[in-house]
Length: 213
Length: 213
DNA sequence: CGATAAATTGAGTTATGTCAACGGAAGTGG
DNA sequence: CCACTTCCGTTGACATAACTCAATTTATCG
Image (tube, rainbow over all chains, first blue to last red; front, side):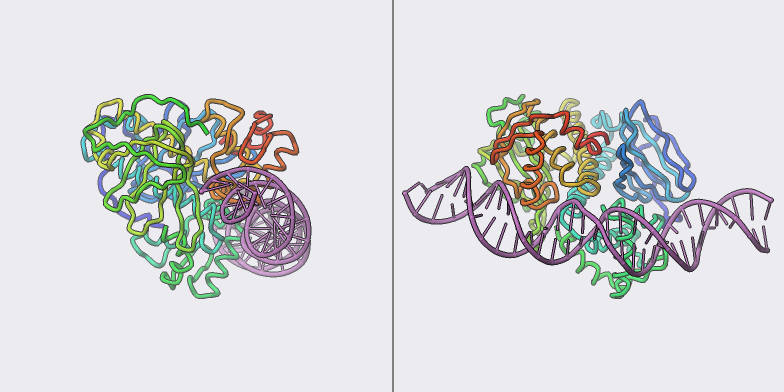
């Protein structure tokens, strides 16, 4: 999606058990049975998911360079993180979150900002999954992606229809059909995973309920 | 639900713009156009919701004494918090979250714990709303409520069917029907807002997919 | 006690899920 | 480099869980 994107140096330097990790395409982050981990993406893209025992999956989000993800220690392994392309990230131990007060203001502010952002996204996601239809979900998803890719209107989706479905609470077929619908009305131009947003204003109108909350 | 419940003294004492607020039944928390607010519930119960311009509502959660809620400053007022019974809470300014490092370890740890808890709940909610059916949603909701009420099997719901529906991404009718279903199979005994959980094990089996993630 | 709101129930609708078939892309092995 | 396989995306036909609308009963509150 944005492999070449540059990021500023990590706010969580050495001295806190930081460690650089490189993942190949489709590779999973290793489990951390002993403690939680906070990851900071340098390049590439990651998707995090939770999977129930009967195989249902929900993808919490797709994360891009500069963004954080938190993976909690779990007895039953239900939380996963997977690279969507060759990806590099910095792993820090959960101790980062345990004793925030030991940090300098900048690091602390970074983490707090991240948390508030996470909180805001969680609210939006609740409304999205609980109170909106397939068109609104996909429209919002695409707009959000566009924004996070610095406003680029043309990009390559790194995730499959099934991935998008598992993120938006839909099936892959419904995602396909909704893409077709958006294309038919000239909101987007889709070709497999190549996507161009033709009418961001129109899309925003479709996603209005989600965008305005 | 638990009006009489006792709580430990607030971790956010004076000196940080703390302020005690009392709300009557059904009363809303006043808007804070200038900054975010962090609230700590002393007694009573609160529900937080976001409402889109076209009137759709999603209730983020029902909060009990000892729990925190965060209300963000918003230009367009879309976030609301409402008392479900006479309620008292302590309001602190968002500055609390801005400069965590200025705090003592205990306060910092309290907030961090709340962070992590919120994050965990957000993940579960995603799966709940995106990947589970009405029965699973209601079963999980009731079990969660039971746990937060110190394991009591018998309690009074302070929220309407519509409220529960807006929380679980369902309509009030579906909530009613699902209650009827759970009662018919002897999982619960419902009478209006009076609820007794007869078979927590059975309920947990129904909610297994959600519980085990 | 009457007025109003909430809960329940039924009938009918609909958005989305399920299942299945097909075509094409991408990856694999000879 | 080509056959082979597998996966992914698309499309259609059909099923169904949940929604909508409406009528009725039951609570709640002044």
